[in-house]
Image (cartoon, rainbow, N blue to C red; front, side, top):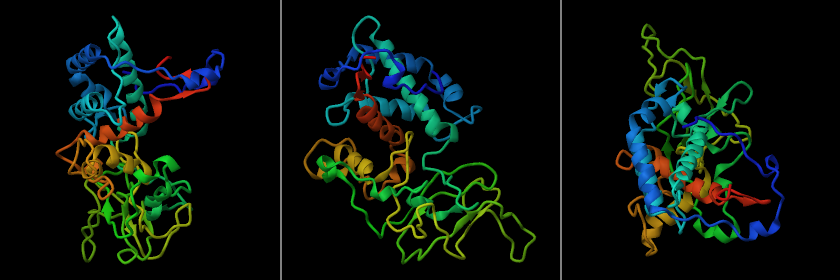
Length: 326
């Protein structure tokens, strides 16, 4: 499998731009036989996938993304799918399974770029503002506001509500020397304001009085949370109230719309409203961190990304360029 895929746009091909093609999208066929072939091939090379493909910084096997969770997610998204859509594993033509493998390779290429190479499930704090990593990066980076990622009017009923009292801390983080700790959110009653991550602080100082140790996360070698004064993120936020919607999973599911859709189709809300639900006990709106923290359902970090892939990438059909047709 490639570890990256080229960006493909309509302009990169010589196909004429036919408006009627957008009106008649190519409909994929659910190939049961090809799916069995694809899964059998993957099983044959599962150790290579774990030890040669799912790599942190291209050298060490990822501790977050493993083959078993990937395969479980793939089976769920093929067998059950979401809202009538499924992860494409080829058709039942003689070479149909190859199309399935290409779709998987493209998905994994995007996943490598997004998260696997960083061994991260939770979004890392990476937006440096005036040489500081604001703790309010949890609300959004590069001027974004994740709690304002709304659905279209037609799908607005699927959104998660923003609970100002929700308090969550991420379970993964970057691993470089002094890397910022996990993102977190909480009400203003808990965090009236937030400061920044001091990546240059030497936290391992057992000779100090009292002794100091690096305890903000496992494997920490330097740095600390510094809340002595408010520090703005690039959007001007200093609080983290309602800011629990940072990216999670293999393609970084982000915002109240995307988490809401997961809950609407796969989680507790589907069950509560009498629709089929793969995870009836999981409320993705009340606990978005479950995507990264679940030990029981390790496939969730994959399913969140596969849901996006099925809904947004596989369905791409713009300006005469159709993902399935190509």
